[in-house]
Image (cartoon, rainbow, N blue to C red):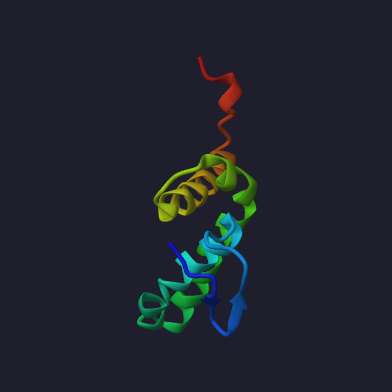
Length: 97
């Protein structure tokens, strides 16, 4: 997957052939930089905020063991958005029948 000298920006991580989930998720987010650069300045901020949501669920992402990392990141974002939407519209999930 990665060599012993993995790079994220200017940082080097040595001694691992497979990066931890947290580091691998940052590497995945880094891959989206070309897309981010093409966004409007205000949209970049929103895009960064959206991607930072995935950090809230690092523990769950680690335990998910999915081979495609972007799926876990997107599910974390989707889950947080779902929680926010249900809170806004006042639906209590536990009261559904």
